[in-house]
Image 1 (cartoon, rainbow, N blue to C red):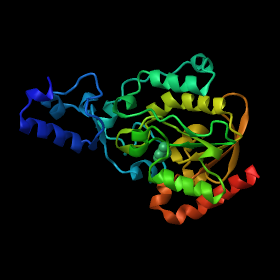
Image 2 (image 1 turned 120 degrees about the vertical axis):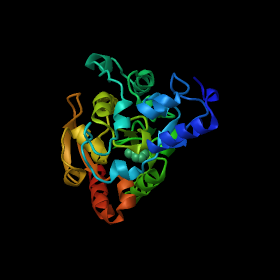
Image 3 (image 1 turned 135 degrees about the vertical axis):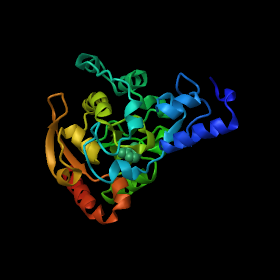
Image 4 (image 1 turned 180 degrees about the horizontal axis):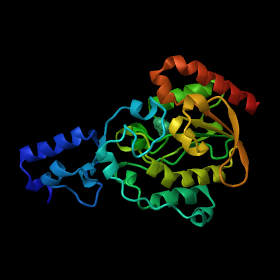
Length: 285
Ligand code: URA
């Protein structure tokens, strides 16, 4: 069935249903799912991946960053619809990842990755920005709407604040290498699920191994918890240097800090963030 088979009222009902599920934005002229249009009846019964074919959700960044918490399938920030659109994920075998020996090859592996529903709703893969040879690697959480459109991390409001934060300690994007825990935008900017984290964390760890940064700066609770394997919140984790082995036997001094999107909503916390930045500057000196 295509949109042409439906009446105007039925089409409006379909759109209303998607808006109720959190969609706010058309991300392309063509449906990105195999099924170009989902019959009204399936919209009205069970939310499906196809129902999210070319719209993405609109919950604010605050959903992802406001309350640092572990993303589990029972997280209150996940709706039933979001849980249902995730097919079973296929975890990469360690030797498949070990066979990837360059950043370009890792990007290609992600472009070819099957089994992650985020790809169906995202506009672009967001792999990296900055200088791959930089001493500092920054790991954010996931692309937002602007990053999804452009295909680069941290280009929206949070990214502009990140640029100012870096400038405050004399750095710019040529002095850092930037990536995210998730390379695709989660619909509605929701928190990465435990399943998504389990699938994509090995790719992030390989990314770190291949970039070989001297120092890691992890921004935000989701990425900090995933990379450190802890349930502690970001306010507890931040500000402390830890030597972390990301799977290649090398220990890399790693600092967790507050996410710029969180700082945009809680400017009083910039003081803590600046302490962390000064600590990074001291290391680099
Ligand atoms: N927030 C992130 O964590 N990463 C981005 O790329 C943009 C916003």
